[in-house]
Image 1 (spheres, rainbow, N blue to C red):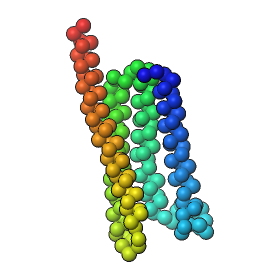
Image 2: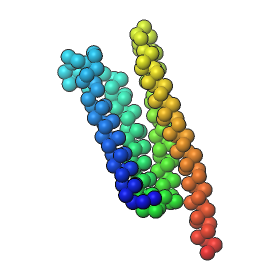
Image 3: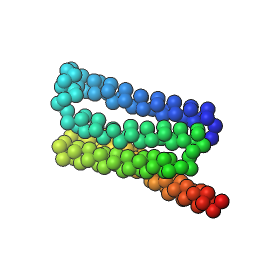
Image 4: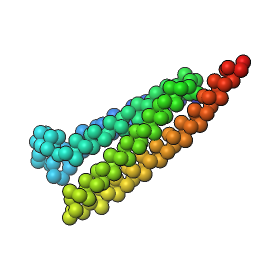
Length: 159
């Protein structure tokens, strides 16, 4: 892969990370029930918001691993153990994110059984689907890349 194209993709990954971080910090201020709340009330009296911030750690770790994989591709080191390890980490992050979203869905059903939670549940289902697809794709690519690395190391030994 060309160095310039991987650099552009790395910049896109950075912009995605910054955009998600900005949205996570800005959205609680405009949420209906927090419109008149103080910063302390918004950030320290809402356990669901704290849960969302903890869950987002796996998202940002996965983004960093994608950034690293693009770096390996730009250096023509994509067929290496560190790239396989990065894909494995992305797989684990996707699975952890699915678990966190399932926990959030359970929270909505248990704590707010009378509220209209259809929108939140649907967004959660989309998040579960996307995270599951990413985890599955990372697992498939990890397996393929591991096989390629193993074949490359076997060829290096026979030469």
